[in-house]
Image (cartoon, rainbow, N blue to C red):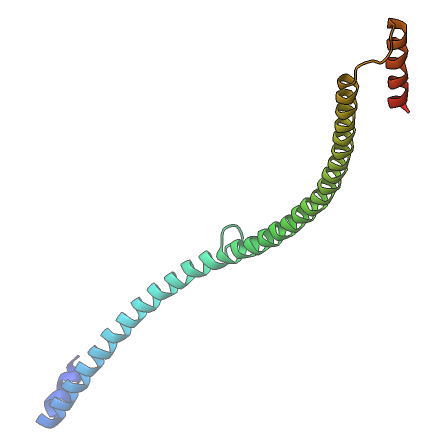
Length: 147
């Protein structure tokens, strides 16, 4: 330390001012470097935390996004299968409905014919002078309707 005093004692005022300014600059630079080092550590820790949130193999965003893409594909395929099944069932149902409608129409037409025949049968008075003749007339009418 005595060598430093001797060096400072031998210097001129402008040299002492320059030496003081250099010391202040060195102090400011050191302080700045310490502050930057602290900020660098903070950013590094934050970067590590964010990297973990993105790349964690169990719960990271990459895994979740991959799962979401997989789920979307699975759901899309399932919906396509369901739509195909619905179209197939719809075609079967349409064919069944058409067959049932045709059968209904045929049965309805037969019923209408039977009702008309019955109405005509009931509206006609049996012909004949005796009961035997009237029974024979009704029997002939029934046999005629059956043909």
